[in-house]
Structures are given as C-alpha cells and as structure tokens.
Length: 400
Image 1 (cartoon, rainbow, N blue to C red):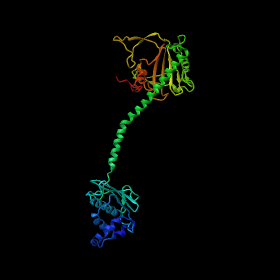
Image 2 (tube, rainbow, N blue to C red):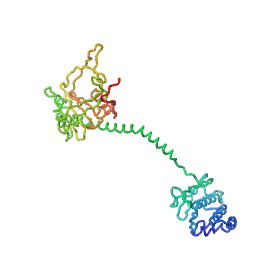
Image 3 (spheres, helix red, strand yellow):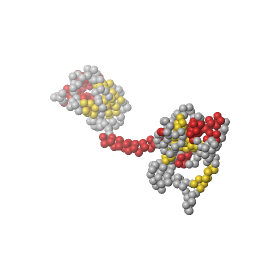
Image 4 (cartoon, rainbow, N blue to C red):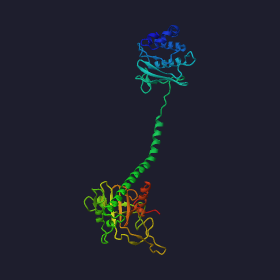
C-alpha cells in the first residue's frame, strides 16, 4: 500500500522497501477501517522511528490518485516524517538533522526544510503556496510552517493598529523635521547664489581697473561727474564690465522694466516716523545680468567728503539727548552704493537673504557697516557660508 501510494516516482521508495515488511501488518491491523492514506500515515509514523536516514535525502511523490487528499494533511505527514527522521540516531550517536538543510519535492511543489537545536520548520517555496499558506479541502488558507511542539507555526506580523501607530509617529517626526530641512536647503541655495553674484560684481570692478589701468582708484567710474550724480549713466557705464547680454533699466517706466522695481525688506527691523516696520523702496537704476541677478547702483554727490548726520538707533529711530537735541556724528561719504538681488524679482526680496548692499569708496568696494542692508549677512556668507537676518512683517508695529 505504501509503495502504491508513494513509490511510483520514488517518494520514500528506498525507505518503503526497507521497512514495509516490518510494519505494514501492524499498521493495517490497527486501522482496518481507515482510508488508505491514513494507513500510509501510520506506516510512516511507526516505521521511521528506527531508521538511519542519510545526511541529505531527496523525496518526490506521485499523486497516484490521491492528490485530492487535503494538502493540510500532507503537510502534517511531511512534518512528522521530518521530526521522526531527525530523531533517528546514527552510528556516531548524533542526530541526522544537526546542521542539515533538507528539501522535499512533492509533485513538483517544493518545500524547504531546516532545523536547529530548538526549532524544526517546514516552509513552502513552490507554486503550491501563496504567502507561506496552502489551501485545505475546505478552501481556507492554512499555515505551512511547523514547530516540534506546535501543529502550526505562528507567522510574525504587524497588526493594523501597530502599522497605523508607526505611520503616525513617522508623520509627526516628518512634520517636525521637514520645515527645518527645507529651510536649510533654501538657505544653502541662497548662500551659493550670493557668493556667485558677489564674485561677479567684484570681477567687474577689477576688470574696470585693469582696462583703465587705475588699480586702487575707482573714482573714474563711480564718482559723480561735475558734482552732479547720475545713477542712470553709472548703470550704463558699469554694465559694460559684466558678461555680454546685460540689460539696463534706468526707471520702472521703461518697457519691460517695471518688474525690477520693488520693495526690499531690511535684514533687521526698521521703523518709519510712526513706528511701523518698513522696507526699502530700492528705486534706483538696475542692471539685469543674463543669469537673472539684479545689480542696482546709486550714485552720491559727496564722494569722499566728510558728512555730518544725526545718529540713529538699531531700529532706524533718530537719537536725541536728554534735552531733545539731535545727537550728531560724521562719516566719509561713499562714491556710490551697489545693491544686488540674487533671485531676480522673486521672493524673499529681503536684505541678508537674497539682497545685499556694497559700499563704493574712491579706492575700494566693501561690505560697509549698515546691518539693515545685509552687510553683516554678506560678510558671514563669504567667511562662514551662513545667512544672518531677522524675520519681521512690514506694516506691523515694532514690539520693544
């Protein structure tokens, strides 16, 4: 019966031939009314206890008319076969299953079998299985993993609640970190743009000095002619030292120029006479470079002259003494100011972020000391690669 059931293509063929005569009588006697596959199951369970299995055995089976038998039953039968054979002693006293990985091929459906000291497992690896499951006669999925002490090995998995909780945690962490990451990315881009634009301006100044053979003397380009400032003419003259294709917009009324005239927020809060936070009008001629950078120029009438002025506090409010008299100071007037915006008309349009101001004296171009115009931020960018600015909203009252 065992040979008929399994022997056609060799499943347990060698085993059956060696043990069949010894056990078939007892097994068939014990289950006289049982169906033939139960008798076969008995034979395998009883006979395998004393065999000495080889280190690696390959089994295959034919359907032999019984493939309609529940795959779940077959899985149990194979499990029992594996456990029993793994317990069979060898001549050296060791178990055959120690360190052995076996593979059973069942009617071209593959099952990978492995065992360590604690766990015996039989896992599906062929077309019979779907997601480590097999189907029984009742149409329900059944687990196809086994443990010596258990009929069915429980497959570890996350519950829906655990998945949702994990996703929730990930969402909270993302909400907390993404804004910072995005801001850091934007700041990095602004720093790169500022460095490039600053370099282009300084190269243009150096080109002027080289072409006119006036190193250390910028008055020929930036000083007002005949004592009368003309920022529009300065923009045209200065544009010649940038890459070809630079466009000059002297006023917002010129065709295609209105978009380049807009307010720029200060790097630090500044207030008007009413105490409202304000911005710079930046209404001076512009040079639009081919890469989109906007370079503005503002000429003065007092290049190099000593000018007296009323001091202001950090918020732009004029300072007075205890008697209400203005507190005065002096400074050497520059020849011109150079403004540049690295993002064209696009926001943020803020000094210290995408807009900066340079001071032109008779002999050099440098950052200057006026923090609201982004001088401190530009110095930090060139030296340390970091932006320096304060966020505020134009039009609101300054909270002291």
